[in-house]
Amino acid sequence: MDRLESFDSSDLMEFIAPPRIKIVGVGGAGNNTLSRLYSRKIKGVKTFALNTDAMHLDNSQADFKTVLGAKITQGRGAGGDPHLGRRCAVEDEEILRTMVDGADMVFVIAGMGGGTGTGAAPVVAQYARDTEALVIGVAVLPFSTEGINRRKCAVRGLLELKNNCHCVIELDNEKLNDVTKGKYPMGQAFAVMDDLITETVQSLSEVVTEPSTINVDFADLRKIIETGGNAKVLYGESESSEPGDVLDAVLCNPILSPLIGSDYKGAEAVLLHIATGNELTLNSCSEVVSALEYELSDDVNLIWGLRTDDSMGSSVKVVMLVASIPESESELEDIEKSLSSLGDSVQMIN
Image (tube, rainbow, N blue to C red; front, side, top):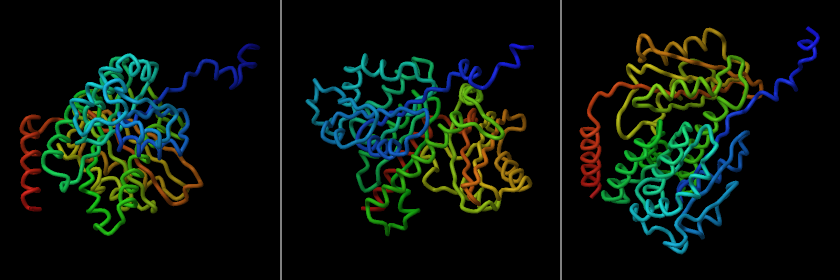
């Protein structure tokens, strides 16, 4: 009894190993987003910037920077060739394996359609999976005006990344037009995409690094991801605590609509986390959760958490990781449909 009475929180911390999270930005687009993530100083997270272009890498911000394939490209970039990007990652296998070693969760962020991100990101993801870490990819596709060949290359890169990750957050620069109405300056438009990625990655990281009122731990996250099958991530932030506004923010975000696949109907495993201020009522919270559950399997394994923070006021943030989504069509049919639609889009533009 005396021993139990003297056991305080400082003693308890000796037995706690917080999850180790690493975020890797690959290529120019990945480095740009990583710089924004780095500036936020997310608790318990280390950032790594990888690029074949030494000049761009030098202007990036991260805890660690590495020039990929320096002996092959002399730091001059991959020239839009994904095969060269992949070769550079394979050349530096030992460095990359050491970099991802020891992580519990790894985010791999890259733009698709070019050389370094498209070619090297799937390799980095595979090295991370070999360590038994949970691997989440973030892939950004190019504008249609960049050409059908670049878009096709991007889709193929996305599919390879999906094969090497537990789940991938799919984003498409083309959908920035839906959000900005084409009226934003280029820098501001790209900032919208970077902010969305940053908020999504930060929210997923904080699910397991920050304590919650209804807590979700790393074991919960691993259990959902290891269910397997198709997966996707939804994220939304509402300035209002009204259930309708919160659901619109989560379900009607055009940028987060995936290029391949659509909904999460029939999904069998979900991790749902809500962060809110002091205005979300119990009934409103229940309404949000019930609505998000509607399309799920009847026997879904739903793990949900809630963090309250008075500084958030009336705002609400929701991040939802959905796994084990039934396949509605074969992957080959999805690929063919996607590539065909890309071709049709380009023909319409021309």
